[in-house]
Image (cartoon, rainbow, N blue to C red; front, side, top):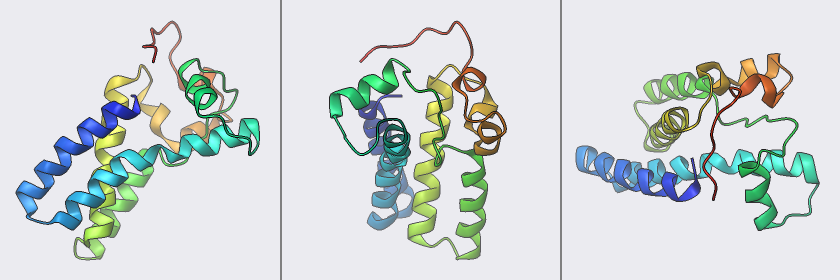
Length: 146
């Protein structure tokens, strides 16, 4: 899913969070984490290219699937379980719960939008296949272009 789509959906969901909770803090953390979760793409880009960064090449690198390994450390169902437990244990702390909401909506939308297996969004599954994109994404899928 593209950044603009995550931003739009985070806006809508965070508005709903504010409406239901009355908390600007919870809505803001939900909004930011729903978008900033994708910072793990920067980690993968740097692992492939080193520290030289070109924004145009960055988006092309992912849209054209030029990577040979795909770690995406934040894109994992495991995080949702951990964040839910932490939210509950902290009495639904605004920061932890906001990150849980943002990560949840981001991951669910990615799974609905991207053509991939459910297991593709498990960090431990990706680790077990050596972060090899051939095992992460389904074959013969159509992709949208920027």
